[in-house]
Length: 260
Image 1 (cartoon, rainbow, N blue to C red):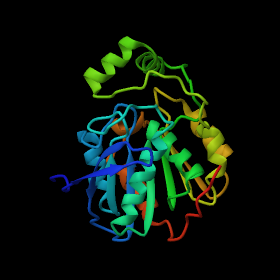
Image 2 (image 1 turned 45 degrees about the vertical axis):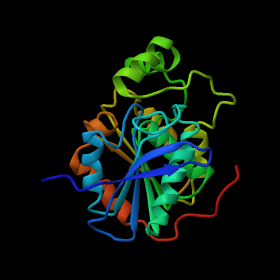
Image 3 (image 1 turned 180 degrees about the vertical axis):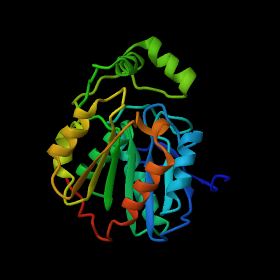
C-alpha cells in the first residue's frame, strides 16, 4: 500500500527557529490531530516515520516535523530542552488547520519533549510517550554512551552532522531543564500513555516505571514484550493500538496554559 500523501509546511517557533513539517490529512476521525515527535537524529522524512504517520492517519490527521537542528529545520539541537518550543509550534499549527483534539505522540527524545511540553505548556488533549527516558545524563547502556559521545565531543557532533544531518549545540544546559520524571507529575489532568519495550537497548524498563509512578491519573502503562527502541522497532500493530487510544481521548481534555 502506498504511503499517504504528506503536504510540507513551514512553522516558526516563539524563539524564531524555522521548523520543517508535513501534514498528512486524516483518513479517519476528522477532528483529531496527532503531532508526531521523532527521536534524536530522526526526521519526519525518514521512511520509518512516514510509515508511522501513514498508520496514524487512519485515526486522525498527522502533523510530523523535524526538531531544531534536525534535517531541514533551522537552529541546533538542545537534545530535549528548547525542543518544547518546536512541539508547541506544531501543536498550534495543528489546531490552526482545524483539528479540535490534539494528541502528541513522541518517541525517545520526542517522548521526553512531549512530557515536558504537556507539563509546561498544556497545549494537548493527551500525551503518548514511547521509549522515553525518565532522567537526563543516563549512560548505563552502550547505545546511550554512544549518544553522549555524539553530543559532548566535537568529533561526535561532526559525525552526527555529516551522517545524520543533525546539528547539535556545543553548549551545556544552564540551567538544567526539568527532567521528564519531575515534569510528569504536572501533566495531569491531561491523559498520559507510557509505552515501553522490555527489549529496549537504550533505556531499560525502570525509566517507564519511574515516569508512570511519578505521574498522576489519568495514566496508562503498556509494557510491550519483545519491543525494542522507538520508531525503528515499532510494529504497525503497536502503532494501530496507539492510534486507537488517541482516537478515544475525549474533547476538552487539555487545561489552560501553565506557567511553571
